[in-house]
View (cartoon, rainbow, N blue to C red):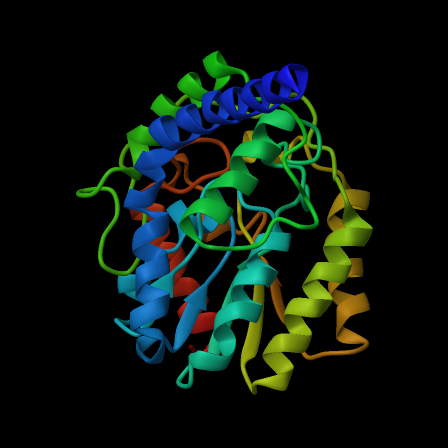
Length: 290
């Protein structure tokens, strides 16, 4: 009996030790994600254009340049699995929704390391479960987190995730200036098959509710474009073609677009700064008639 109680005590202690760092060092994400959650819960009928996705759209599409009925629901480190869960949860209550914008990254699901790094996976899962109230049945947290990694990630996130001035009423994460950060010497494409399946499910949800699905591939600095391959670029079109066999999808690849190539538009090699985000939002609005 004593051994049994001891095991229970050890289990509870481990759970508390793991939970406290999560709550303390990721509570700042509530500045973005809790606000987004509250907006969806309380004002779904205000949204006519919904921006989903990862850091490229979180930083790179200024919703104010598209109209006040646009809302940016993107967040750093998200893979498409969570976008599908969010859309599935809320699309039925967004009665005025006309279009969903999704950013298809050149690496598909490889940009944030979700499938390669346990730390990235765990923190992404926890943040969406904790702040967006999403289930994590498909990707349960698999191991204890490194405290030092969490702490480091906390401070890099905090640079962007405080309110204000970084996050505004339309969910936009505004960043200024330029950085010297450059991608590695390779940009591998990860999980193309599973990405295609998730995008098809997103397209199915949009089609069912009479909503346009607009997919864009963001431009990059020219140095980053050198890390791509013709075969990799063709894979982007292959994914769209496969989904279009079953559901309507509108797509445009902006990689190599001359008007979006100046380095002054970018914070780093693959992310726009505020100037670029405003210009790109205007382009997307014009190109797709949003």
